[in-house]
Amino acid sequence: MRSSGYAHIFRTQTDVKRVLVFAGKLGYQTRSFDAAARKLGVDLAFVTDRCHQLDDPWGDRAIAVHFESPEAAAYTVMEEVRRSGERVDGILALGDRPAIAAAYVARGLGLQYNHPMAVEACRSKLRMREVFRDAGLRVPWFRVVALQPAPEPALLGITYPCVLKPLSLSASTGVIRANNREEFLAAAGRVRRVLESPEILASREANLDQMMVEGYIPGREVAVEGLLTEGELRGLAIFDKADPLVGPFFEETIYVTPSRLPVARLREIERCAVDAVRALGLSHGPVHAEFRINEQGVWPLEVAPRPIGGLCARALRFVRGGSDEVIGLEELLLRHAVEMPSGDWNREAAASGVMMIPVPASGVLESVEGEESARATRHIVGLEITARLHDYIAAWPEGASYLGFLFAQAETAEEVENALRVAHGKLRFGIRERLAVEHPATGRVVS
Image (cartoon, rainbow, N blue to C red; front, top):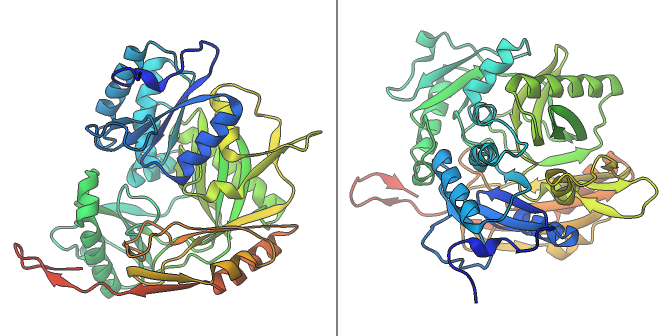
């Protein structure tokens, strides 16, 4: 018979390692962690943002919290841990919003993790720019602008090109490039509508009445996946972002590793990653960071105290010298969280990559064709269509979710990129425009 409360989330064996996994939602990524935990004999308890009145409807044993109030969420988790009487050996956070609550819980339990103030700095694009500037890292000019009344760029000293972005949203939602005054005014209105949308208002994010404006940084972009241990950063992979991210919107698509940049440039990126992490005060756990590279050098864009998002982790596999065993990023992170041996696992020699399948237009997804043909493409090792038929899906800059993920492996990065493009070309998505209607109460036209 199941015990009351959440005491059942932990096993009773004292020798079993236990990890709290903080996740904004449960799905593909959390199932991958669950599979890795079963292999290692590690017990997981998920902490997720959902209604606390639902009695474990999906059988995932999750503790229900609200991440918009991280200290309250941490208190709930701490109470359930205390009530269970079982120890916790490690902490992991998947996604930006859960990371602050995870940091408070780790601090309360005396576990190695990032300080809450460091995590909070990563959640604010403004604070992150200030930290990078004060540490002597390359940053563009930047300032915070109120969205009401409509800003006048000439009075604010805005120069072009520039980029407008919300202060705390992720996945490039609401990020828009403007090349002149007219584009700036149109972009500001669009950012305001994004932040006033019911979905964003329901998230209760802070500073939804403001945006950040900064100088546009030309150049190519890379992502770095790393792992911190007591303040020391270990690089796991550097991804080339194969498509140019020049705007007006910044939806990411193809990640390929290893990077094809010169070795000297890769070392420069690694040094910048170390400097950015230290400036923010991050100390323990996974790190996902993004950088721009041009003739002036390396510019840190963002650093997040979490692993790569969505299903993209499947593009990373690790091997150990003298062994044929291959593990995924999830197992590597769990090993690290419970202090099992992890330092001798390195990314496999083969090139790999992922395409986050872009959304060509906003609308209702009516059909998907060409999946079998895409899967049959040489070097393609996986395809997951994550968007559900008959659901509305938004294109960028309003969007935050992709149609799915394509995965490829080959001897070279060029073969991986080509395979992803060829396979994507075989997919066909039927998207029907959603009719606009007038809201009966406000009279506003909504989709």
